[in-house]
Amino acid sequence: MKAIPNFISLSRIIFSLILIFIKPLSIAFYAIYIICGFSDVLDGVIARKTGTTSRLGEKLDSLADMIMIGILLLVLYPIVNFATEIVIWIVSIAIIRLASMVVAMKKYKTFAMLHTYGNKITGIVLFIFPLWLPYIHTTVLMYIICIVASISAIEELVIQLTSKKLQANRQSIFSK
Image 1 (cartoon, rainbow, N blue to C red):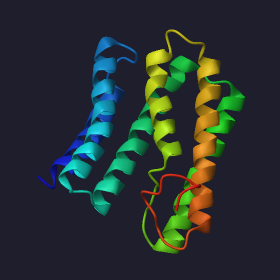
Image 2 (cartoon, rainbow, N blue to C red):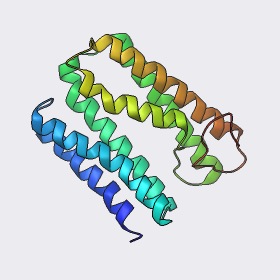
Image 3 (cartoon, rainbow, N blue to C red):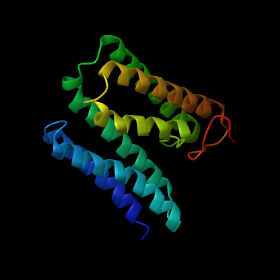
Image 4 (cartoon, helix red, strand yellow):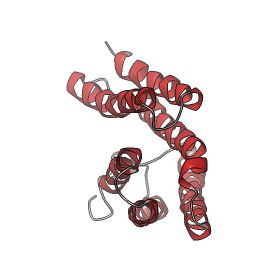
């Protein structure tokens, strides 16, 4: 039972990799993409309900999220044709996220990404992005995503810089 949430996170990595080989924004793409999204919610829910949360599970979940986002950028970049300022903004967010990981590695001697409300909201907005592409102008979507992602990345970095111990499940900069 303890391995089920970790298996679900691993399956998200595999399904994300499959997205590389499928025509973007096709029915097959959306089907696999939605499976990835459900698995992202399901692994945490099952782990909490069964009392099987673990450090490994937290790391697998974060790794699966990073892989999925990276693959989406790779697959959707040629279709979306991001403006230069959006690319710079995305790189800036990635640098802030990387800085947060480096701080955690130096302070706590482990890979860590926090499960804040800001990061969860960013994940939801990122997940919805491909689903909204046919209906909302890409630039508007990208500004929304970049604003939300910037706030959550900065929040995570501030938490990592100011915390005395690792708090992977800290909900917000305003909570302890």
